Amino acid sequence: MIDIEKILKRAWQILWSYRVLWIFGVLLAITMGSFPGGSGSNGVQYNFDGGDWGNAGPWPQLEEFNNWAEKNLEPLFTNPEQHITTFIWIGVGLLLFFLVVGVITALVRYISETAVLRMVNDHEQTGQKLSFSQGWRLGWSRAAFRMWLIDLIIFIPVFLFILILALVGLAVYLSVTGGSEFTAVFGTVAALGLLFVFIFLFAIGMAFLGLLREFFIRQAALENASVGESFRRGWLMFKRNWKSAGLMWLVMVGLGIGAAIAGFIVFFLLIPAYVVLLIPALLVGAVPGLLVFGITSLFTSGPLTWIIGILAALPLFFTILFLPLFLVNGWFKVFASSSWTLAFREMKAMEAVLPDSQPGAAESTTP
Image 1 (cartoon, rainbow, N blue to C red):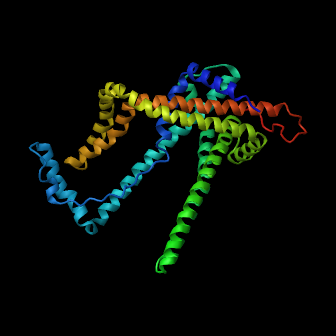
Image 2: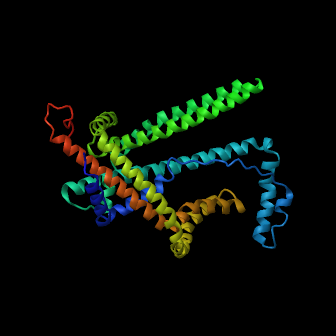
Image 3: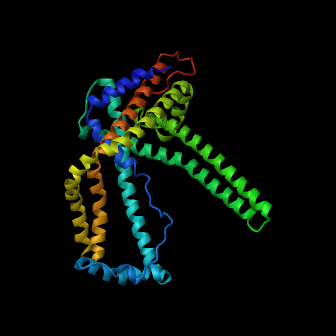
């Protein structure tokens, strides 16, 4: 069994002594919270009419926006069937926007995650502390791409599970519609029961895949293994150390719950910091906002240019505004990643001392 107490103490020491890791922790906190990203509607619908814009106020800007909205927005909601092409272009624009954001966040996320893994591992091997640029070069590697592929492959069974759940729900719905009252009641009860079973199995499956992922990605990043080899070696390493891995997972889950509660409290304690950062956030957010506004003004005019500019400014604005919160979240991400890396190293060291004839003998070497 690994010494979890020693691992956690060492991870805590690394966190506070190796402060370059904080930068990568902040990048992870920003990108892992938004990737994979998406948007959705909350189901609320709103019907516009002329009265909604009739009391815009005496400001010329509001009057201009009122006139623009009555001309361009109101018809979209009053006669949507006549503006199908507009909705298609809006959908294409949003799709491209989220695609670009997704690619950028994925790039930063996996480079940063790989950098943290390798920097902590190298620090334990050599005692050397790298600069940010050196760490970024460590992360900018094929290992980062392999880690992305590993996550993509792990997502496949998750997608299939959700698809099966949707098909079962559709089958139950079709079976109860048009039937007797007893059939409808029985079908509803059965559907709710299946839903709870699926949710329970889904939670267990996600937790197990999350545990295995800690082994898969470290095989790719620290052992320079291919994607297939990462899955094979990671699974074998988990099987040989499942007791230590399970106990480590339970400890990290407990710490994660504690960190979530503490983060909720810290969010409110940092309100004075948000106030201080409000002006810098506005200034930094104004740079991409004005840039996009200038580009957009070449193709269109009116309030639409301001709306697009504001939307472009919001991501950087909120990033700077909540930077202290991202820093606190990044601390925990670095601590958790370091803990698992140290556990991985200790499990590997334990396997290395086993006789070669024993099935648990180590089969890979550090590049």
